[in-house]
Image 1 (tube, rainbow, N blue to C red):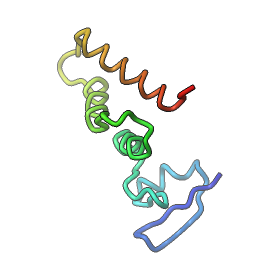
Image 2 (cartoon, helix red, strand yellow):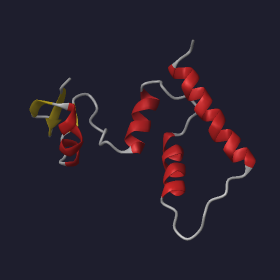
Image 3 (tube, rainbow, N blue to C red):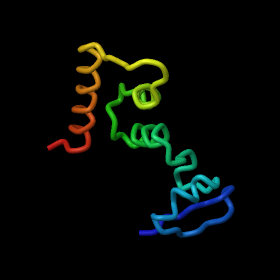
Length: 101
């Protein structure tokens, strides 16, 4: 299924899904999603705006947490039990929001 991409709000092209990521890196944007650039942060902000995340969720904090865990510098992160439970609770609330039944 092709997506409609725009560039500088003037040009409109229908592009196959396989080409979208490359186009987004070259300043094309998905029609109706001008801030979506294929990053995790952009995906989380879109999910929050679309109502897929619990209202109290901080999309930036989730992206920062993920980046801290994946792009470690000098030391390993060890999470305290309450931090782990908080992230697990958030995951459960997201799944329940996506599949309420």
